[in-house]
Image (tube, rainbow, N blue to C red):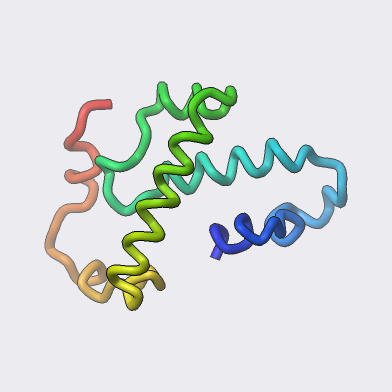
Length: 106
């Protein structure tokens, strides 16, 4: 949903209405892009914190975002039903998600 709003340049639908037009649109776009990269389903695909800091400073985000969009588009073409991001197996999985997330050194 947020990705769609971002692609459609509808940042006003994402940002708190109390801010009205008192925000930097480019800064909001950057933060949303970094947040989406950090919340990928696979921990191995998420950026390390050092990379997050660099991206927030404007270094390397464009390349990483373009790469992610290509992968997302390819996944959605290969598995159109999975693009809704609702996986029934995740709800009652016996896999320890926290252990998976913490298994890779950052």
